[in-house]
Image 1 (cartoon, protein in one colour):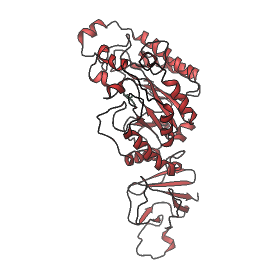
Image 2: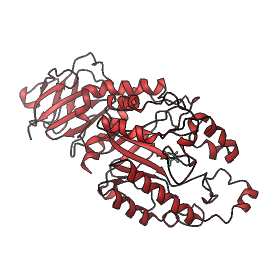
Image 3: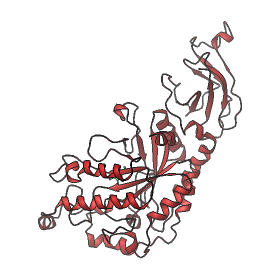
Image 4: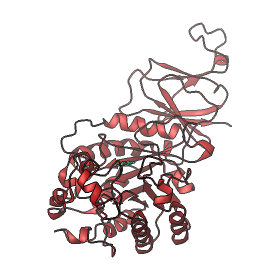
Length: 415
Ligand code: GLC
């Protein structure tokens, strides 16, 4: 688990033929598209600008330490050259395996590799027409497909997972998505996918791998709060590490007309918030159907990267500062004897840190290693300006806010 909690920040990639529709990766289900209607995206999928080395550069530049890529999403389309289906990249006009070069490019830059794999499959002839299936409202279709045998689908699922875990070398995490116990097609998720057997297969093929918690087994190596900012303690109960997955704009797949983009500043604050609460952040990009990260995504990754270039030691290998309560509008992260004060808003001159009197040997801004002077109540007996409790330490900040998405003060603790 140590690489995972050390990494803190990863890239999620949702990519498939839904990028051509460019209106969310659930488009087939949301718009009740039939296989025939959805086929146009398969027939025109030709990502001619695909260059995963550029994606890996953007991820590494943003300070990300791992990638999780959708090998197959709910629409059933496979990025790799599976022997078990023709519904795959190599049969599109592009004609090439998209997964192998991606794994290689990210690995080359030292990022760990995670594979997302959908448990749902809206293309497979034996996947039941359940509550999410695109044809759920088509009574005729439902009647005609009532005999679908989910056991056959499970064989296919297991077979594909075996391919993924035997063809691409060491895989660091397996990210199954998702189960909806009691709301499916009669069978519980774990019975339908034969989750225990699937998990055993994964562990046998890649003993070091981390597996997420969406197999309906009630647990996993880590938990995956989705598009929420969890409160420490509400997830990861039982001490499980957690990773919150977040979008840039609310959609995972490329979504051309979406205007819900988060600012770079908000994304940096979200990352800090995650680390301060003890979790990882898996930030998603949905590449377009030419195989590129769009400018709005690149701009944000680079802005995060310029902050990370100067502040990564407050993130990588850092975690919560147990027992310390930060001042209003601030967050703490801690790595060994270094405590990081992240200032979400800029105070006027002073910031008072409870419980730190006598515990700080030196303080500096992280972006430029310039000293931040401080005083403690006992330094100035009877000082009438500073009515602060005896256990406080007071930082003296400049009036001018440093030009960083989140300014950070690095405090060297004495113990
Ligand atoms: C969901 C969605 C999905 C996305 C994922 C990421 O369960 O179905 O489209 O891939 O979560 O967490």
